[in-house]
Length: 509
Image (tube, rainbow, N blue to C red; front, side, top):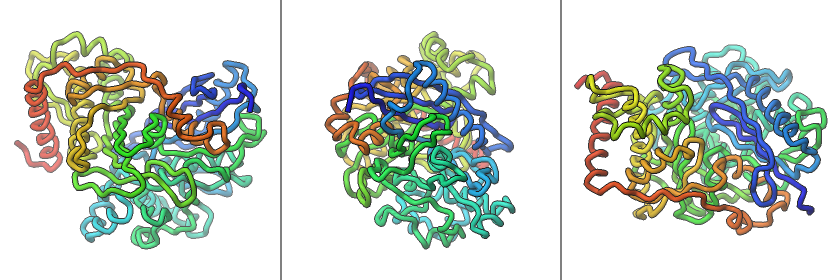
């Protein structure tokens, strides 16, 4: 293989789509990114337009290639990383979605989840899937579509419609769509549906039946790095060449893989629309007793996977977007670094951005966004700082749960994602956790992880050691707070969380 071959990654996230081309050293050759609309038709509802996502995917592919006048035929393989749990059903004959995609943050399935809880199915579902019954996951979203969108139910009953998370949708479109597109997902994405059995690594018939979901509409489940190849891009498509697609991971697992966390006990935290901390737990699923999720970290061969424990936080970077788009307090997310640093503290306020309830470790569907401690002294700078602090405190919530589950004290945290570029935020995170935060030289580790999986499948990279050798540390943030300060500030945060949880239950303080 010559040195002028490349690997590409499509990183389809909650707020936008990125296409990245990498060389054998894991360095970026070219890339392009575009945001898509966030559709919020009702309080707690979040949707995406699947056709807009597809159009943006095509555009970023073309822009990145044109930027460097790159020959697509030199791309050895493509990997896909995607926002997980976001749910879509489409007509495979026409290629048209039957409704907007229901985003992972959406809480419209609360009643469906509560009925499952009331039927005492939580234990069985957690034992088989590693997940808790929650609005977060795809299974209840599929049921909501089938119960509330008549044409979707009719087409599914006639065998004319199929389900997929966004990875499945993108791969299906790239491999031909209505003309023979591959209907496939991987172990990591399947493990986020609340429908895959972690032990059999296949769809669970009993859970599908409980939710009235026909197995025929489900994609086939394949390894995250698939030497058999999911399918090939079409020459008439946006790449203009026949290229194998053979890497697929949910975005958080892709970041874990891109951070080279290949040994049990290695931890990463991604700072994106939400925060997601994963710890590699090895070849056996580890059941959490502290509000974490058991999930598949990655699978490199048929029928064999590595597992992880995950702490999921729904709203972190999305809270910064809220400051920008809803309140108009900032013009750009990057402004928060300078603004937050302009005040010595948050002026006594705490902001709990529980816009979609609270995920790990609380799993409280009723919690709501709360700002407490406001006085006339408080200015926008304090709210901006409190927003960044909330990201760090929620991460500590999850880190403490991981320590409780594993008994292992964390000695450092690998960080990535868009917000990890914020030096103030990363220093604050080190201070609140009391351990160093390590940022890699290439921060888009989600794209890196799916590219790694695609490259392993084709032999572009030979093994995991090759990938470890590529990873380089760019900066290490050491904690400077005293233990007394850390405990005092976190105690205030816990009081604010309690307010958030009580408010949602309408039990006023």
